[in-house]
Length: 460
Image (cartoon, rainbow, N blue to C red):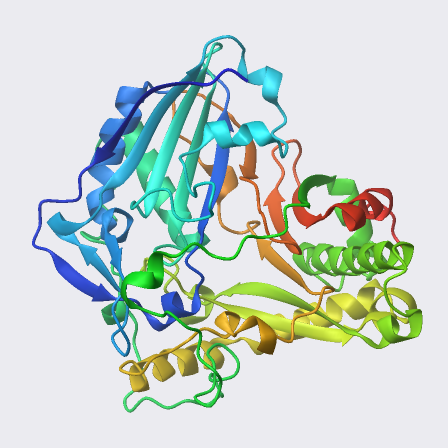
């Protein structure tokens, strides 16, 4: 793919007074990685000038997207610097003059995708940009467009990004006028969360989301060493895209007597199939004992949005998500138990992270906001009890990405995350090929990925 970058520039932050906004307890729990999403639209589409006019008008309503992240030495929290001292938003305009968009559809994982989105990390794995938000607009010879956004996850979760994208799209359709319903700015930061009076923790969040005080703390937190690149990930991790038709999803639900949602049924199906593929690949390598593997615990981690519990779906920008965990023995998951059992485990895990749990977490942040809170995922590697059979499931099915509309009749025909370098991550995406279908991006090491291709479409 011959992608020609036409220009790259920064939309400056709003010319308002600078303010330091401490990260909320949700953003402290969230990893600082960037996530990137590509949206493909057929022609006709608004001009780049129209898109950028609306983008410039929309960004001041979302100060975190043009902010700058500063790391403070413990015990001070990291802060977003908003206003005129922020980093602004990165914009890249590019073109593919030699081919139409149809030559590159459907969107599938490919090394060429890196040419269609803003730079996120450099060759050493360190952040390639000081910007927390970037967008690349790539126009094809037919008039089709790929709009790719990259966001630092501590600044915005998927629901917040969707709110911003729909506000931007609405401004494009309105000729640059931002929808009146938007706050100015949209509420964000610790002040947008409402702890009880007095705050009280009903659950133990040290050990669940944050390290207990007695645990060894990671080195080089805060100060000048915060910019050191993260450890390199396994280079053999491959990304594959599965397409589950609406008929296949219906069959999965029917196999559990329609007692579970499409999300629960598909997540449980993938948990079982990915685990089976990993076990098969390990057995093929002669690695491990079958009996020991059957007794090994497998865990699925599911991101749960708190807005539905706290009635703040659009009222809080930033992060409002926690992780639900479901565990079982590998033998019970893939051999002795069925899809219904796995789906019930997924449901129970998600339902445990309910309104009481989210409110307790907000109260925990209010009570311990002045303490150093280290996310559980930063546990030193020697202490990490991680398992090669664990799986992380992120669902985009209810985020509204599939209804994004910039106007003029351009049709959204593809949604895809950029390459995911971590093993054991699954993203559920509403398919644009047919109603009710689900596209699944799976990041796995090469050997289990090969096995998964053969079993991903079988229903036991």
